[in-house]
Length: 266
Image 1 (cartoon, rainbow, N blue to C red):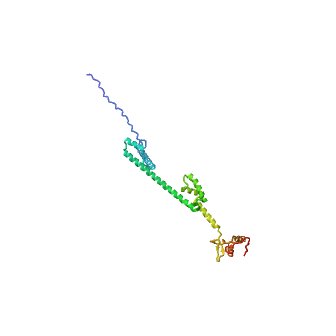
Image 2 (cartoon, helix red, strand yellow):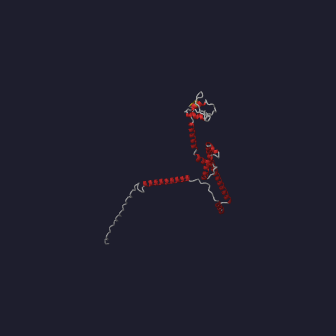
Image 3 (tube, rainbow, N blue to C red):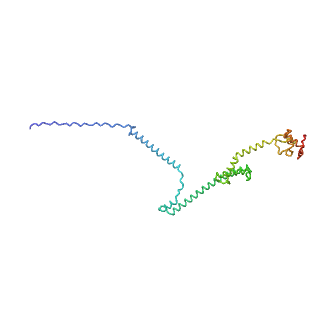
């Protein structure tokens, strides 16, 4: 057998191994990092809590400022429509209507009572002030006096403006204020007049023995029974009040100076 060529064994070449690059490590604070996700989650939770608290606060404020809802009034026609639709029975409609009418009547009665009480207080205050004016001006009790007529004219003018009768105490008070001013002003004027009157009275008193002296006003005029002719004569002579009183002691009470006769000096 011819020698056959021997094939040399073929050694397969190893396949190249692809190199695997390691994945880059993500920084914790970078977007998507563990620390970033943790901080972001906390921030969103805080925003959610703040939003819920704001909503609760607004709801609470709305409830506080919301007006108190009173009883709802239902029109009788609406009640009849509910009965026709079968939503309520006729007995229920009648009961609702009865309660509504009772509530309306109670509300009206309360309002009228409050109004009457308020009016009574105003009238009492006006009456007190009117009585004070009358006590200071007694002539107002006489319907024929000038003071009364003066106030009456003011009252008729104010009656039209105020829309009230002249008999209303509020009209009378306003008329008195218009005619005389305030009570405080009247009191001040009266005090001033009394002080002026007191200051105009000459101070005269009596010394022991009946001789006049300065210091105290007499209870009566010691010259009231003396003929004025004597008084005029003494004044012309420059006599003082005390000297005239002294001279009057020597004139008989009730003595008159005859016309044409002179007065002889003592």
